[in-house]
Length: 103
Image (cartoon, rainbow, N blue to C red):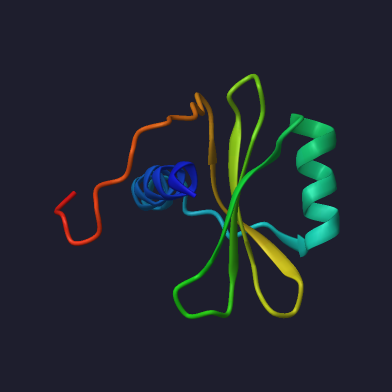
């Protein structure tokens, strides 16, 4: 769980900074097709999963041993969209702050 929170924070930050630069429409497909594509083309496997804040989306991080990564967001319809992607993925094992402590 702690790896997920750190991964999600990093991915969200990277997504926010990369959206303006890319200005490309999201790439969306049925989830099974999207996951197969990430595995086949990039050798990425799921590293974290969480429920979106509105409860209407599942947010997953996929990454490969070579460092590529993708954040996939899936809605209730089963359609998944790539929210962000990049390189140099690194898993960290830092402890999260105690509940109520500032980051």
